[in-house]
Image (cartoon, rainbow, N blue to C red; front, side):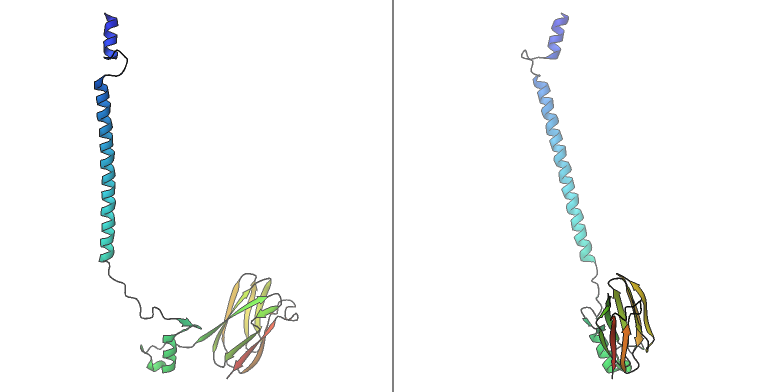
Length: 195
């Protein structure tokens, strides 16, 4: 009798297949799992859609940024069109009547290498403010104009140094590198101050 009890609890089917009730329970579990996954996916899409629409609303609610009137002005030789107009009209005729110094600065980029300067001739106007930006491409170099008391200190390879001065004397002035024998080997140039 114990033997009959074991057979009836393990299988209702004589071939050893699970009963219809077990198959039905597994099917219900699968359908439920699919439904839960589908619901979760639709909630994720819905929250992403809400988030995107909120971002669009936030962008639409943002106030436009007022760009300054100088936006789009092209700068040439360190001077904008507005600066050029102000300097032609004089300091008292400028639109904002500012007392700022409207002096134009002439920027000259100089490359210093093994026994050369490029350019080796610089032309400026008398009274012009000049900024020399010297980049040392190898070794170490400096930039000296004795008569105008202009000097950029020794600058090592890959670095840049600057000096700013007013060209207040007419004439031709030699600039040179006084590191070791660089000047003797030809590392010289000419600053020409014209009227």
